Amino acid sequence: MYSQNAARRAKEDANNPNKPAPVRSKILPRRTQKIGTPGYKVVKQKDVSTGQLSLLFRIHYSEIEKDLQPRHRFVSTFAQKVESQDKNYQYVLFAAEPYDTIGFKIPNIRIDKDPTKLLTHWNPDTKDFTLQMFFEATADNYDKYT
Image (cartoon, rainbow, N blue to C red; front, top):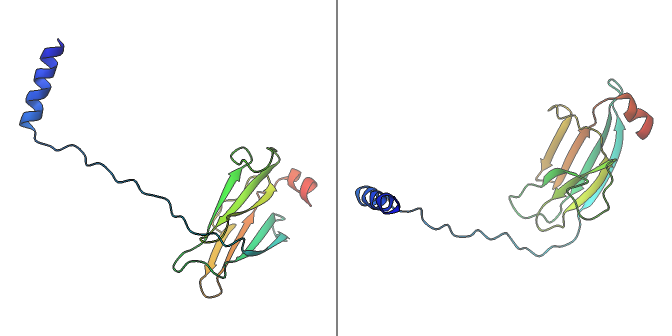
């Protein structure tokens, strides 16, 4: 049985001269010298009309690499290894080369992903990155965090 399958495979390979996929070259991650943490300001806010709690992050990247835009990411307490795990918190991380990645510990409340409630803005002239995020409105949120 094996010899029949091997012969059939050899015949198919001879009739179909497709080349095997080329070996991919490994892409190496960028290794730039870190220059420390950027300047930042965090403001707690409350929307008067909806009563939603929000956070406004302003981060100043004065020496960011040319044509690079900062990125942000939300991380669960269980995905990070810096602090002990606490299910009551999550983290928001900000990264831009050549700065160290900075993170903020925020309440583990569902974030309102509506485009009008999760806003980011990068100003390349002043080199300021702004993120405004709203938490979903629930009665528990106001008791714990106001």
